[in-house]
Image (tube, rainbow, N blue to C red; front, side):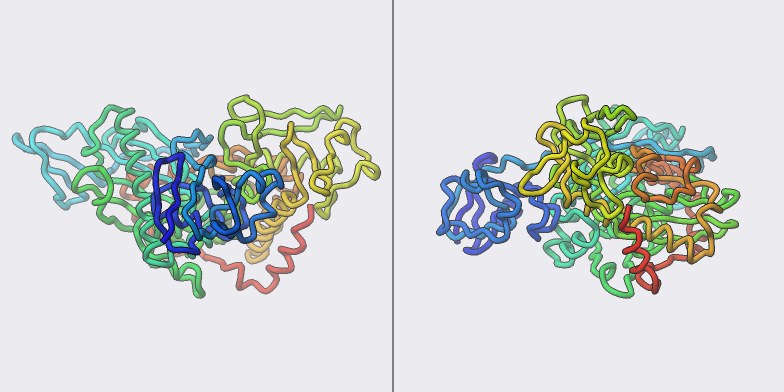
Length: 555
């Protein structure tokens, strides 16, 4: 056994020789961001080893993520650093769950009557609590005026929780946070792999449960209510996130025929949550392995099935889920866009936190206008900023249709832009802000994400024999999607040009649809019936998908 002393935290972890610094951190409860699931590809888990030498630590595949001066100073990747002697580690880049993130909590709403699943009745001595017609508990005294619920959007990257008064329907407060599971595995597939073992599943389940309990405590304090008067919680998220939040192994989602273990449309006990001792969790109906209850909630919130004409609903994010409504009939699919839109696998990428560049515009004069979250100096690039940058550079012909930079010698773009074309590490890059660059590899990541989403749109239209110009309305849902600009989506070709002027950004419908499930039980039955009628299209089974994907890699 060898010891790893995490100096910053004052924690010592004992591990077997040959295990990594990341494994030592996870055993000791030290949080180090490693969203690629220890594959060594993201470079986010940099740590400093005091007096690093080759006999104490052997680092695999870490050099391409480290500058020469960083290697000389003792930095390595925690996930690639195998430990053979006692060492001391400084974790300068550990992530705080209290980190400020810009996460949208609002979404499209519609009017409905309040028919809550939870009702309370005071009999003169005690208050009886019912779920539907079933008595689930009793409380001393008259607590009939205290009835609350939670709508929780469990995103792959972020969480949003809204506290709702079940008697009035009022949203009292909301809170958002980073999904702690993203520190171990950034996308759905790596998370499924991580959770396929009992130990991995337990870590994922405990981390999400602890964070949800922290959010419950925060909203309860903010609204000055007793947590024990929270009786029902709605979990709205993609299918894999639902499995992990319910402590169900998601391994079957990653293997053909991609069968969920959870189908939703029911209540389970909320015994692990710090709410009422007889509290319940409602799981909205699951559409398919990769089109989950977050989209079911989105369909409800947007009233998609009641739209006239052809409407396309898209949740742009790590998982590109989309649903098309044609003459009242719904068809759904999803495509793995990857984590680039969350700032992952991007050289200077970051989540939507303070200092992240979120807006980039090149004026006709060549002047560049930028805006960061918090209006502070640029420290990195978040997803919306990334699409803005690439879209504007494509429009200005700084980036060609093949995704490559056009050199200043061959380019016809302004002198102002040419000044920001810099050779860095032997490659032509664009300096977005001081010492913050867009690299050729970043553009490739955007191409892959864009290609996947656009191919999904094209295949969905093809399967229903719908032309792009026939689509009357395009609704972009999700927290990330709300911060995008139509111009950027069209500039890079993520959406067809025929959609120009038809795009509406409708916000976090996963959360607001969850609220509707919480407040009106009629929707639970109607959506359960509707989901059974939705045609779930598996893109991998479509013979032309690969060809369309390759074609759509171009800008």
